Image (cartoon, rainbow, N blue to C red):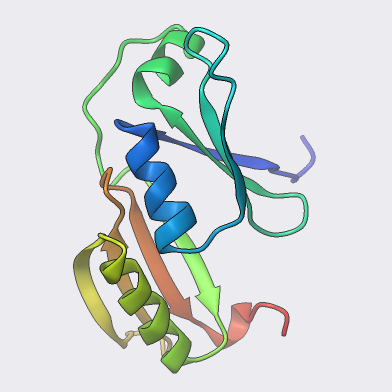
Length: 140
């Protein structure tokens, strides 16, 4: 397997609400909800880095598409890490997310490994870590 993930799909309970959070609240670029003409096909894609998209898909439709039972959500299954260029940018992104309706989990602070990070949950409980780590600085 070649290491090239192109889409990270997260399950949501309310696609319209999730779209508003990510598009209007966090400012991620999207064409909005597509695939509404297909039963169980509505999805929203957001451009992240070149070649990487975030997809929002109803949790029940993920279960149906994969042929598995719908299970309760768990915020500890995975985290989404968003690396930024400074501690001030961590604070700014955290403020933006909270203003958009995110729930503060852990305020931004110095980490045990020498970085600076904080956690929030989106409206569906997905755990985001906003991180300043000099080993993973995004391009300027």
